[in-house]
Length: 181
Image (cartoon, rainbow, N blue to C red; front, side):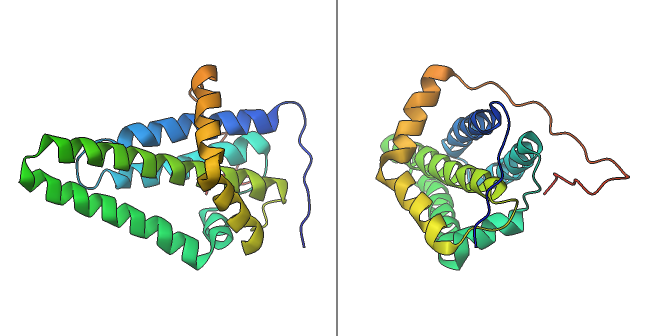
């Protein structure tokens, strides 16, 4: 069952700008040829989800994002990160500049597409009242990202130059609108 939340003004556009900002940040972090840089990307993705939730006024949890991606999708994301981290670690011992350059490009693109997918799924979860997406719909979003949607998104937002998002609003003690993940 899918429900739809309607948003006023430019909330979805603002949420996509947040995704763009964090996607480009993740690409920069992913390009750093240092093992364990993925830990910073994971933290950035959590903050991105909080920013999206705050902007759209819908509670989005990391658990709902993971549930929407599904076990296979999550394992794919983790597996790619482990591969890139292992390759970075191995390249340190080779002393090869071309290997480091190739790994920087691989790390940047992997971090970017994963952050983009997580962000777009978080937006769709918000449109679905914070309820996890059906696997079939999530798989369609992931396929679209791999089939050129990510490249189109990058080109669009390179021109627009996304701004740093505002700090997510903190939940008040007396209400249940907890936007933090």
